[in-house]
Length: 350
Image 1 (cartoon, rainbow, N blue to C red):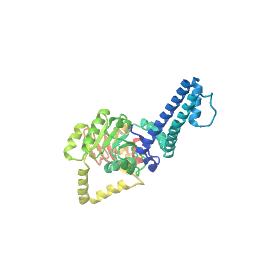
Image 2 (image 1 turned 120 degrees about the vertical axis):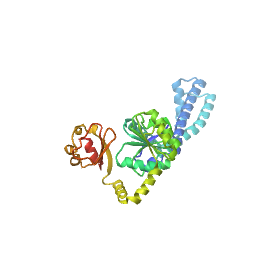
Image 3 (image 1 turned 135 degrees about the vertical axis):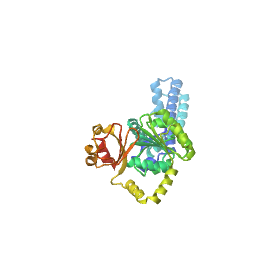
Image 4 (image 1 turned 90 degrees about the vertical axis):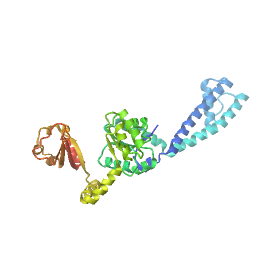
């Protein structure tokens, strides 16, 4: 089962590896062996010496523990030979168990198990979050923007090196697993999520994720990365709401930098500013019902929040760019605004 963790300590959390998984398995195996040897010893004394079960179990325990207590009852020759055999076997079993238990504690796996359980509970309480599949170069950029804008999200990535790079962004919840598997998507809370971004490096994998995600949550908003242009339509047919081609966007960015460098520089500075995160965002008029039926002037959004209203998209898909002061807000309108996260939250809470 994929393990879910939140990086409370970036470097320590990253040390979770296959070696630690094997350590946990070995501790479990040692525990089973110890139980088996204890059962064998108890049954042996019960059968050979005709003792009661408790006396047989007690004799087995003090023999395995090599505490040096005297015999529970006088042993027959056969009983003594069985005791010698039990001591030899127990030396190997106890030594194996102690060494693995020490590794389990020293390597921090026990603490990680506790952290994993805490994160299981935390993820189970998340809703209306976004699932990001893939933490490569593109995925890391997406994760950075989500983190800066305080958007709740979970990363799914099976490459530990990619996860290590993501830890440089901040404390981010993630699943180390394969996003194409339904069980991993369910572990990320896909039934409670509001969106999914799949940014894997292969169109086939992205298509498979889209198909799985759409079947698990038909209402999910899905954004898919597209590598080959000819596969874009396949991703849409699979259920993607939007298909994004990084290559096409990169080409448009190069052209824009040449034609309108000041605009590109402005947008770059806006994204890089860590002290005051200014972003473009959208707010549904239905979420601020008190504004419906009011004009832009009457709503007085700019003075109340400091936001800049760039445009209003109406229910029929038409836009009012830089709307006039007498434009009336209607039901199902979407306001496209620019401002800080605090200003946007202020608008939504009016």
